[in-house]
Image 1: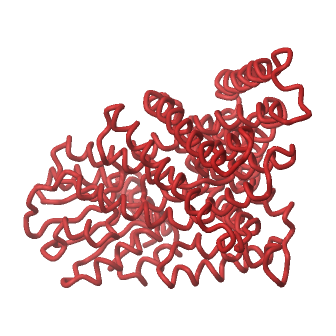
Image 2: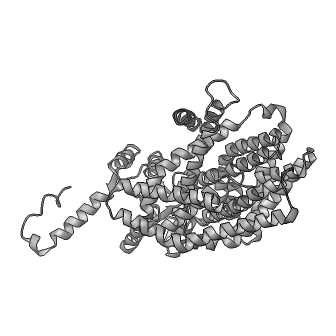
Image 3: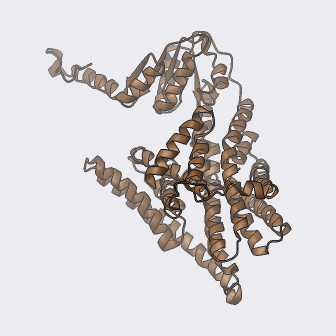
Length: 540
């Protein structure tokens, strides 16, 4: 299953990229080809979703590593009421469609709930591709997602009470189930904040102290998987939510960044299997047999949910840029929808028709979500604050993180004009607050780059840590009407070669810069002033 899934996902993902589609399209097609509804090899329909769940766990763990408790609390006034209202509106629309098609109230309610919750994987992939994960908009979207996950945990507990052979509401069954679920979730959160907040960072630091990279990686995976499994088995909380809290608490450790790097390859690989597993469940014949019902389902996901989310965010006082981002983020459904509708089917509450409509809505909304996000990006870029006129001979500083921020200070003190480009809202606002000219957006975007007027710039410095993204920016700069020198930072020899191939004139390896700084410090010591510097310290 792993061999076939990875190989086909790679082949069709690469083909989709070549055709200027999102690679997600290729992953979904790979799943359809190995599913039971197409001829040829049929993958294990039980194993594939379980492998995909590993990707969801690692993905939410990685998000938690970049998301502090302070970030979560800062968006609660928007995420909590927004998610509740949006889920209510989407559920009501789904319930109305189901009753119009002649379904029971229970089946219609489950159908509506399935359409109300967004996919963790798709939402995070969209935010990452737009470089919005660490922005205010990204934090609101993630907080919104957490509220939806908590609501679905409650729904999964209450749905069995709707089954025909269940005791249902007799003897307060639903109320008792709800109370027990709330207590379990509250107990898990309290345990993580009181005990886990101290134990997990302490454990990570102790393992890092052993100096074994292998044990450190295993510790990271054990924390992610162990907390996720314990949350699900002991407290009835979703795997994704448990992994998120584990990552959020490890974020308080000095080694949180290293933990994020170590989990990244596995996270990306297993997240792909999520899309393959979705494709395996899809029956293409429903598009021919029930086209009108599919269009109505898709309209609820893409239009109904998005409009409700946009309206709530605007009513809560946020600007149109944030509202559009949240609306585009939630215009899809995914893993929780499959779990809920699958539970309904196992209890005899949901028919195959309902399940197939949910799957069709998921497939089509996942396919259409990247174009929606691209449209949102263009709209929000227009709404961004225009940068002041740029002087000729200026320096382009791409990235205003730790390195870019320090470089901006040095350039400012030297009186060298420069313009900052960054994808993060907060960092752009911080640069402007410091008196610097700053542009919000991805420097690889032609329209964003044009605002910085690179044709009259003297130099571009790429301080972003991601070599793939920096290589894309370097290539874009070299393809312009006027080619300017490009300097970049790198974290490995392979990254240096990649950046040079993409057009960078020079790539500075952090370890080399550190070696030179250390050699200068050693040379300044009295015992080395009269003699030659040791060969190790003088290495180029």
